[in-house]
Length: 308
Image (tube, rainbow, N blue to C red; front, side, top):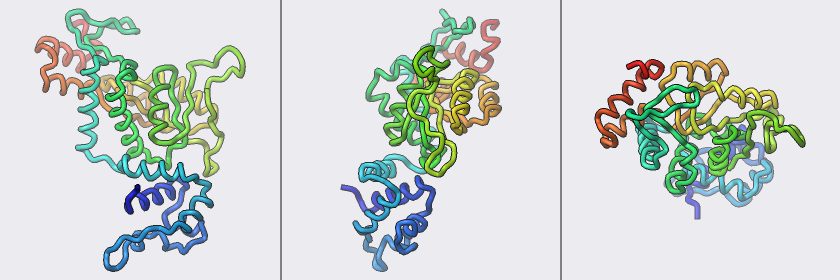
């Protein structure tokens, strides 16, 4: 059973999702414009007032919202804070870093460095694809993702989530389920048969407000951001508005990363960076001092690390 606060929060979320204020939603439903004002939610003696079943019925009807959808809006109001404090963000980044280390999705090895796709040597390696196999940890991180996107962007500003092939696809599905939003996924290039589609799923040309669909690109990680352009260009070519991207992990050590995103007109949102991981591993003494020192040198100057 939902509480008084949750029901009213659900109505507020419904209003925002349709582009109305609480009073605007009431007026649209043919009710007194003050029906949903915060001053009307409690009696003069402080007792809670609930919206009537008739007013709820009218609101759901005029907004073409099912009871299931309204229930989802209530749940979102319970689980997803509208704003995250600095301490909330710190908790998210630290917990994410701990999970990445504990699941061995992040590895340190200064003595036998990893060879990256670029051919460059690195004492660190991250593999966010591993996370999908850890149900408990995955649930925590995807709850964080939903909270971050709700806080930074706002549910009413998100129409569709788009996963980038391939690592972004499961994460976009997990997050879309939590936010009760549609999802699509974007190929790196059109498939060579059938509809020759590059975007799989249904990406409407317009949202409920008659504007282009606000789409958030979802990926597993970001180094310098260059690879995101393929997906962003494909979505924009299809008519979507893409102003935000989300990754579980952002390297946070390449100046070109945020510059590339800025040049594309996209804000990047991430759960943690290498700096968060370094802080956690130092605190927990997860690796020997020599390794931590070498990793820190790499993070400060990744391009010249091999020469040191």
